[in-house]
Image (tube, rainbow, N blue to C red; front, side, top):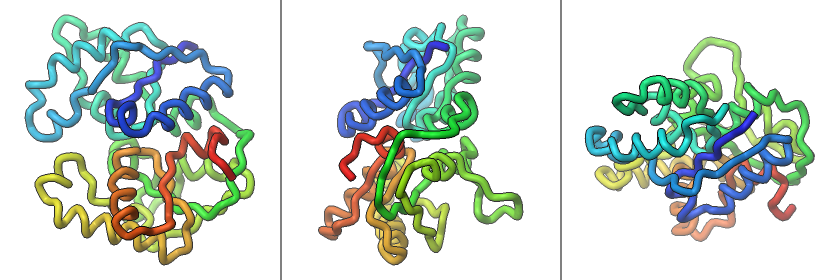
Amino acid sequence: MKVGLFIPCYVDQFYPQVAVASLQLLEKLGVEVDYPLQQTCCGQPMANSGFASLATGCDALFARNFAGYDYIVSPSGSCVLHIKDHLQVPGQEAETTHIRNHIYELSEFLTDVLQVKELPARFPHKVGFHLGCHGQRGLQLAQMSELAAPAFSKPGYLLSLVQDLEVVPLSRPDECCGFGGSFCVTEEAVSAKMGQDRVADHQANGAEYIAGADVSCLMHLEGVLRRQKSPLQVIHLAQILNGQVDA
């Protein structure tokens, strides 16, 4: 298979180490990975704010960059969900349908497509896992706690393969962190309080790291932690699975 690596603009600009970890991890697992150099914003900020009509250029560019790959993989559930739900380019229905049906968030690609059974990674720390709302409720990467159904978590399964890592249970396992894209700008007080509550849950349960599959959520929580001068750190799932972080 040939995979196109989709790195959202905010990851590229603020957390390039997550992009590197994603690339290295996929290559370690034997995947042929290509990074289209002309890729940029997928258009999610405009669509989330009610201006999807202004993202047509983003749609067309995304289709040009990622048409022809067997799969497209990204370490950002929110951007993946945006493409799945909204990508359309007039006159390119076949190409955009293929992209929408073959784009995967990193953890679901590892579990559903590659069906990973082992990982050469070690992380001797207590980790609380935050799964963003897009991944939880949009991509269904894990069961929602309010549903009376068998529990599952694709990121949780992958973390179970990491040596010496202890996942700490949270009091509210799938609560929103309050980021919400433009929500944190238009409702900053509510957003900040939600972030503080999410951090407090991890702190109360003894986590050393807040891990996540969406850098946008982690960026929001990291801002709370910095203001509190807390020793608690944030880390993306790809960094742990890749084994590139210092133990």
